[in-house]
Image 1 (cartoon, rainbow, N blue to C red):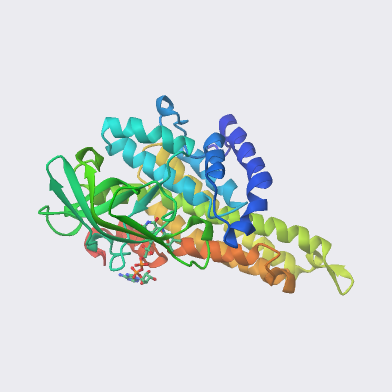
Image 2 (image 1 turned 135 degrees about the horizontal axis):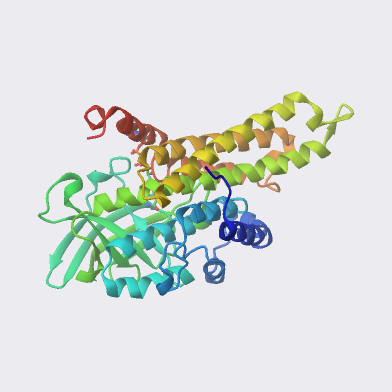
Amino acid sequence: MNFDFDDTEQRFQAAVRRYTQERLRPMSARWDRGERLTRDAIHELGELGVLGIRVPLALGGSEGSYVLAGIAAEELARGDLSITLLLQLSLIAADLIGAHGDPALRGQLLPKIASGERVVAFGLTETGAGSDAAAIRSTATQDGESWIISGEKASISLAGFADDCIVFARIEGAGTGARGMGAFVVPLDAPGVSREVYSSVGERVSERGALRFDAVRVPAQHQLGGGSGFVQAMEAFDYNRAIIALACLGTAAQSLDDTIEYTKARHTFGQPLARREGVAFQIAEHLTHVAAARHLAYHTLWLRDQGRGHTKEAAMAKWYAPKIAVEAIHACVVLHGWVGYDQTLPFGQRLRDVMGLEIGDGTPEIMKGVVAREVFGREFTAYR
Ligand SMILES: Cc1cc2nc3c(=O)[nH]c(=O)nc-3n(C[C@H](O)[C@H](O)[C@H](O)COP(=O)(O)OP(=O)(O)OC[C@H]3O[C@@H](n4cnc5c(N)ncnc54)[C@H](O)[C@@H]3O)c2cc1C
């Protein structure tokens, strides 16, 4: 067993941490108050190597490990949780397009994903189909050398500014349920596409919203794989759940670091807060939960890097880490007193941001269902 990051991972961690402290932390509150993410900021993430981790070397990426992606998530989230959505979506897009895309599409899109020139969203959820993703109603109809995509996607991260979206749609005549679904890369400047950005509780810079497709025509080569879109989606979800876990834990760890400093400096009744067991033990407990969840998440990514199964571990990390992150950040608010509840400090924003990832990419109930299915067997699953 070896719990150390290797030299490449350590250098990358230091570079991302530096970037986070210098560039992300000062911007985070401004983004929460409505300032939009600039293209320059996205290109900076590309230059830092964050967006090309799953892009092959030959196409401008670093072909890095999943553990490396976890490090990026954890470190970026110390500055701003929402920014990790750009990382997450670049990982998913690069993996899906890399594994299932037409060679011309791969050559065209992957270098631009790595550089930040194109941002690709992931369009699965609809108003009537979230946890039960196989119930989607968007359609894909073949018309000669094109596909015609129609439908509406809901709650799509980056909807306000993404350049393309991997849209999951029911292929006409291909059967019901999960079997009849396909995945298509749809450029969002195509005729028939419209967008709406939601007013979200948190993660505001991610411009989550709806994408509508009114008979949008895409070339046949924009289909990913065959009619196995749903299987592709589920493969992509598995490891991203550990990435989400590490993002939430990074935000919680930064909040605990901030609170350790604050409680050493703040005096009540003639003593620093940190000298009270009622305070220090709370922090000790939250640090313990964060450390345990962090090991689970990195273990999941390590399994993925070894090409081994990790569905159960990913689902465990996905329900557990956001929950304990919310609890830790909530404690940090209270341990700061009234000032922790003020907008001048980042704790309220962090709490709102992390709560979004309790839901996004699968709720706790669905994650526990996945763990149970892996343990008890498919015949006992409630979701069939
Ligand atoms: C911040 C954020 C980012 C997101 N980004 C994206 C994105 O980029 N792309 C995308 O496609 N989607 C995205 N989503 C959507 C997300 O994947 C869905 O919200 C999620 O899968 C849950 O679906 P739902 O909201 O329709 O809730 P529902 O499925 O309606 O569930 C509502 C509640 O009921 C519970 N529940 C449902 N079924 C069961 C059951 N069988 N047993 C017990 N409890 C159950 C759920 O756990 C939940 O608490 C995002 C969501 C958020 C909040």
